[in-house]
Length: 131
Image (cartoon, rainbow, N blue to C red; front, side, top):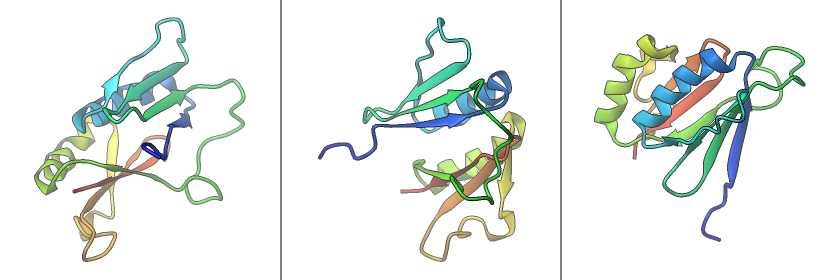
């Protein structure tokens, strides 16, 4: 099986706010935006592998995301090397992301795991893992 993951869909309460933060982050790690202008409440980013991420503001949302409740805690994506993580860490605050576990960077996931943990203003957490 070539690709285990087909796509990931995340819901947002504010597509405009979330788009700018996701666009900066995903394009910084090699994903390409391919938004359908006929779908004003959805955005899509594609990875070169063919996997894609959808961000949607759905009328079916019943409340804000809470990563500490049952369901999705965070999404982990590969993000280049440690040097790239350092750049993302330095720039994330200007693009709608807050660093989590800063005191333990870059090994908040353990001594053999190099990653940057970020959270956007809706509480969606992304773990960016260095290769």
